[in-house]
Structure formats: C-alpha cells, structure tokens
Image (cartoon, rainbow, N blue to C red):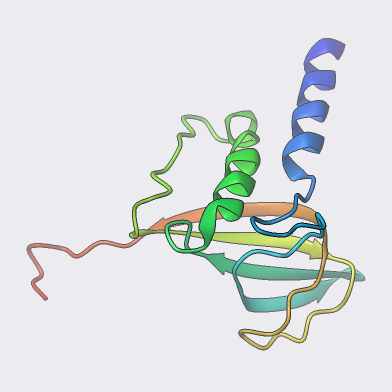
Length: 130
C-alpha cells in the first residue's frame, strides 16, 4: 500500500539525484561518460552517454551503485555487475535541461534526471574465432 509507495519514491529520489564526480572539490555535478546521442521528444531533451566503469573512475562507480538501487523495483532478477571488469559498459539516458548538440564527445550538460540505463557486456565468441 502506501508504505511501499513511500519507500519506492525515497529510493528513486535518492538514486536518481546527481552527485559530484570524484575529484570535484566544489561538489559540482559532472555528467559521466561520453555523449553518443541526443534527441528531443515532446518538448524534452535527452542525452545518451556511454561509460566504462573500469576506466571512468570511482565517481562513476559510486553514481552507478546509486542508480543500481532502482533496478530491483523494475527488473525481475536484476543483479550487480563487476564494475572493475573492462568488458562492461554502461549507457545512461539523462533528461537534460539544455538541448544537447548531438555530436559525440560534445561538452557535458547538467542533467535534470536519470531517465534510465542499460549495461552491455562485450565478449569474444570462442567458437566463431577471432
């Protein structure tokens, strides 16, 4: 009932709130990863950003750990990934305040909300060969 709704709302607000990236002494948000695409839909601007947790530092790993707290509420059987394994990539979808340029590697803009994310594990098929 109402207790579950309150708990879900608190978890979502806590997990989706931007936090400062590692090494940012003033606590200013820095959008993680590289911009791979942006678009507008129904008057809102979105940005898709690609991150590599094994390379993008402890700030990204802390952010993803917070975002991952939402997964069990929406994904049956959701589980953690090894953030130190170089085979994992994370793509985040942010609802942005400003229209993004759409160019890969463009300057990061402050997000207004985390809209979603997905993880990708890259592997070599041993049967198919190199």
